[in-house]
Amino acid sequence: MAYDDDFDDYEDALRGDRQRRFQLYFLIVLVAFGLGLALLWNRIVITVQSGEAGVLYRWVSGTEMSRIYGEGLHIIWPWNRMAIYNVRLQTKERNYTMLTKDGLPIELQIAVRYKPDLRLLPLLHVTVGPEYLDKIVFPETEAVLRRAVGQYTPEEVYTSRLGFLETVVISSLTSVEDRYVIVDNVLVRNVELPTAVRLAIERKLTLSEEQKAYKYRLEIEQKEAERKAIEAEGIRKYQDIVKRSLTEDLLRWQGVQATKELATSPNSKTVVIGAGKDGMPLILGGDR
Image 1: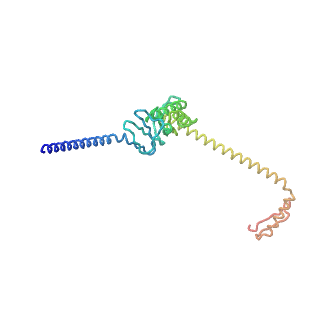
Image 2: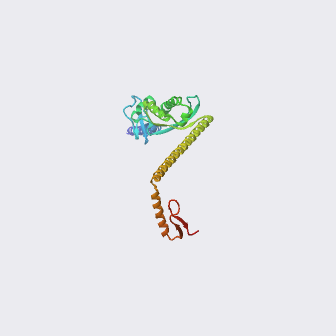
Image 3: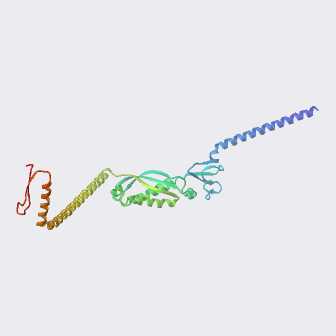
């Protein structure tokens, strides 16, 4: 009887030991899982922010070309990778030193407004990658600018004549958009020339404006002279017409009418009628 009791106690102790070991193992596994989850959290739980899009690379099958992951929370296996792209319209600036047609160096500050083509984001990720700005946008823009600037003189670049800016924009759009990137605009923010060249161009432009102003004043004076000539010709024609209409009888009649009005006016005067060759009245003012 005592033997059976000892055996039962042994089994209970053994069972309790197994249970404790199981609990310990479970606790170890749980802690390891928690640590692994904490360490791999950023590779498992992916958050795509507003204005972003994701492309998933699967360790087994490669880049997923048929799906673009939009905004929100995504759960992936830790051995997969998701690349996040900013798909908003962005603007970046860069300075370039280029040679003009005359071989003179100029400094250009270029601003590029761009965004990745959302419809072709997986292709962009496979062919270029997230560094597409430095691999495509700026190199293509620089190449187009160098070809364009090399065709113009410093003055033409400085004053943006001959459609220089339009040429840069159109060429950049054509070159870059073939590589899955949309370029909204390319702007030349600033043009810096060597000091001596810049001063010479500015002086030339100032003289040109002064010449235009002087020419404009001459045109005004010429128009004024033409106006006065036309006015004088009109006065001469008017006098000729009036002269032909002034007969001696009309002048006598006008004189008689004037004499009647003066005679009936309240002013004191002396009127001598019939004086002179034409019989016109002679009027002497009474205030003398």
